[in-house]
Image (cartoon, rainbow, N blue to C red; front, side, top):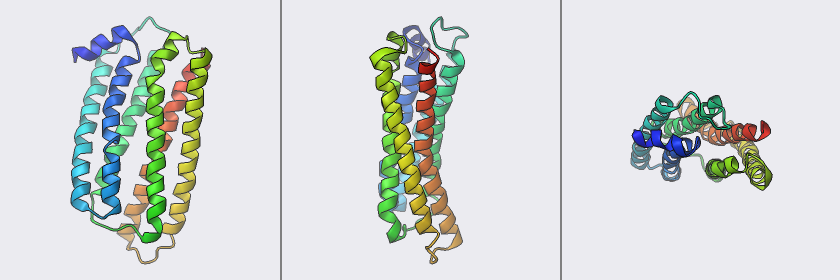
Length: 223
């Protein structure tokens, strides 16, 4: 894509932001998937999973195009390795969304009633962490203009701290859900394992968002 190649002339972050837009489309389908999951709607889950898979593929194509056009030297105060690390973390978020979708589509099931409220909150908090790190990525050009310092840097640091707190909240919520899950003796082992893995994989969205935010923060600390 020549479009991606041209983006490097504007900003070293423009291609990453372009890729994040693709990742956002992928993650943006998760609420529909979660809603279908909560209601035991397997056809709805399968439809959402198919959409997420296609969007993840689009994100992969963009990622590969960026890597193919990433110059050896950007002549800007941004390390090439840092850009690749940020790109890789964004890619992992899209991959995780697809993995969640495909796992949810493995079989029809109903979440145990005692888990439903906590599961819904887990999904919500993980998505909040992602959307906040997306906002961080939107601030990168302003950070560059301010030489990664000043009021803009403090603003971004505050956002990254919020992401860390959301990750902490999701971790607590995940533990509470696991306690309930391990007391659900009526579940078959395959269903127990499926729900266990879904909880862990949904929780990884906030974890990866925090890692991405921290990688951006490293740019601030090095300046």
